[in-house]
Length: 127
Image (cartoon, rainbow, N blue to C red; front, side):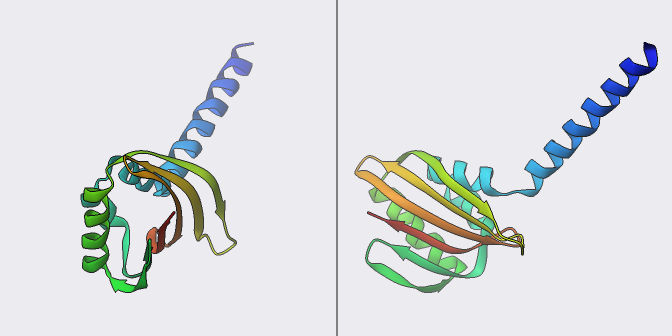
């Protein structure tokens, strides 16, 4: 009985460690929270050196600094209140695609992210 209890506890601990380490490796939760709060200071840490950016009608490839400024401007004009992940998938190459809804004081925006090696390489915020 004692051995069974120890085995169960050890299994629960191992599963917990695995879940926590998996969550720590995935930047999706932090990025989603940054979008929800409009925190570009945190978001910039997850931007690749160049990003394919679409914000409304502005669509181009920019460097990290320009992307940070454009997102900051968007957030100043459209104060975020929530960001809800609607769909998330991980490709065989471990890149992640995230589709969500960003709710702001001016409306809802469909948001798409492509994350490769922990960095955002594509960001789209559209009506």
